[in-house]
Image (cartoon, rainbow, N blue to C red):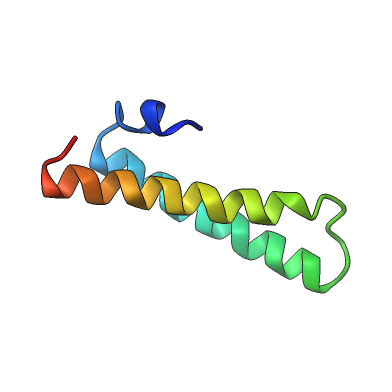
Length: 65
């Protein structure tokens, strides 16, 4: 999801998205360890999504967005 789309959401929605992404990243990391993950790039994408969402949350809390 693009940062522009994330900025249209509320902080509560973004925090829920972070929880969902973190759970999915945990599952991907576990599957990677057990060699069950076929798409290894998905783990990296999830980490970037979490960082992107957290950045938008911090912008909103500081009042920049």
